[in-house]
Length: 320
Image (cartoon, rainbow, N blue to C red; front, side):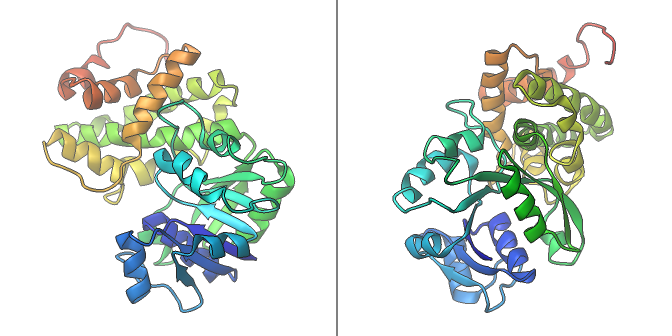
């Protein structure tokens, strides 16, 4: 299968490496000015992996899009709308778009497939999401994991799972696109909260954070029209080890360094997702105490210890 991966950061380069590894014809395409692309063009490697010569690295979006049967997009979720304005100048009919990023659009509260749907006819250009746990640092060492592909198009979803499945990544068929997207985005916010607990010396509370975080995300998914059980699957709870505990988790590290008064230079998608989730929760009338605490700390100058402590002084109620 001819696949073009648009976006060549940490996860985008790993996807290109993986899809080439299992036998697909892969282009890795990025912006000409991006340091990540220039590094791959110059050395065919980055801080995480080395590309084989079979992967074509390019900044020629026209060529990458026109030759592809499947277009995988792996960029910052908040930039997706502007990116779609750029790539829809090319003919996308008959191609499949797979989104390999996790977020909710802050300005609208829309899921990422809805953002893409503002630009393409999804009957002609089906859209899928690829979510779940894993770090490039593990995959390149041969450490396996499980992930999910979900789409409203059943035929496309099944074809992608068959084509992408291997001994390194076992793919499951998603059954709830709303839940898969919201759950995947929300885990980054819970990851920031986990990092804040680490930074404050409250690491032992992360078990409670896992349980209660999953419950509030389940409520949001249900209110949005999805299946609340998705929060307990690979898209959300299944990704907690990689997000709430791993030293490689950008969101956990962001939260930890924020508490310590240090600056984290890399992308932490959960920052803007917390803002988007608060917007969505207001629209749907859902209580998200953990997400709201993170939002207040990041955007309203809330005192981290006061906001986190307030979660433990809420009114007494039944667990479920």
